[in-house]
Amino acid sequence: MTRPLELLWEEEHAPAGELPAGLAELYGGPLGFEGPCLYANFVATIDGTVALPAVPGSLKLIGDERPSDRLVMALLRALADVVLVGAGTMRAAPSATWAPERVYPAAADAFVELRERRGRPPQPRVAVMTASGLIEPGHPALAAGALVLTSEQGAAHLAGRVPEKAEIVALGSELTVDPVAAVAELRRRGYELVLSEAGPTVFGSLVGAGLVDELFLSVSPFLAGGQRPGSRLGLGEGIELLPTQRTGARLRSIRREDDFLFLRYALGEPAERGV
Image 1 (tube, rainbow, N blue to C red):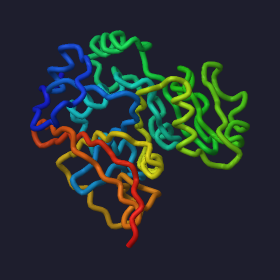
Image 2: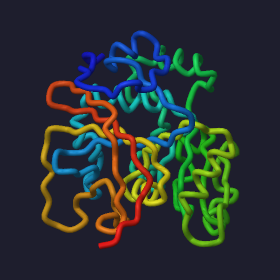
Image 3: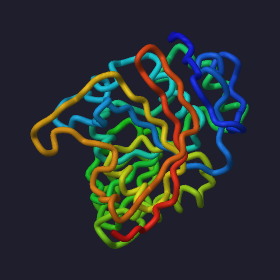
Image 4: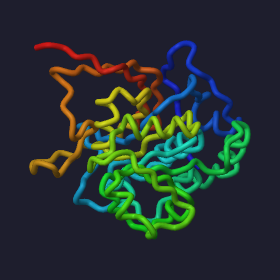
C-alpha cells in the first residue's frame, strides 16, 4: 500500500465521480469523467522519455516501480470500459491482462466495488490495434476475450489462430488501422471510457486525429539522456505536430508523492496553423 497522493492543485468543478472511500483517500480526492472520454496514461522522465525500445521492462525503469504510479495506472484501468493497446505494447507485455489488480493488488476489492458501482463487468475489455496481425495468438489477453482491431490482411493472418473468446474486426483493406475507425468501433460497442495504454506511436496517431480527450502524465524524477536516434521515445512518436499543427492542453490537476508528479491534462482539438 502506498501513501496517499498529495493534491497540490485542481481546477474548479472537476468531475467528481464516485470512488470508494479507500480509493479516494489514496488518490487524494475524487476522480471522474464527463461523458464519453478517451484518456491516455504515460510515465515519463523529466526530459520526456516514455520508452526505451531496446531495454526490456523499460516502463518499470522509467517509473522506478513506484507504488504511487502503479496506483494511478490501476485506478485508471478500473474506471475504463476498455483498455486500448498496440501490437508493440502487447509484445512487450507477454503475460499482461491489463486488469487493475495486476499492478496494484492491495486495492483489488476496492476496484471490484468501483466497477460494481458503475454497473460494469469485473474487468475492462482489452482492444489491440494491429495492422499486420503479427501478435502472439496465445497471449492471455486474447484468451480472456480481447477485441483485435486490424486490417483485412491482419484478419486473414489471424483467422483460426486465436482463442475462441477473442474477436477479430477488419477495419479496411489498407495495411493500416485508421485510429478514427478504431475508436468509432469501440464507441459503436458502447464503450464510453476508453483508456489508451498503447505506446507513443499509437498515441501520436490518436492525438493527430483529435481523438484524445485527456492525458494522465506521471513525471518521474530521472533523466534518460540518449545519443543514438531511436534509443529514446517521447510521447508523440511517428507524427509531426508543431509548427503546423498545434495541439494544446489545459491542466486539470497536480498531485505529488515525494519527487513524483502526477499531472492531468485536457487535450484540445488539433488546430492547423500557418508558418
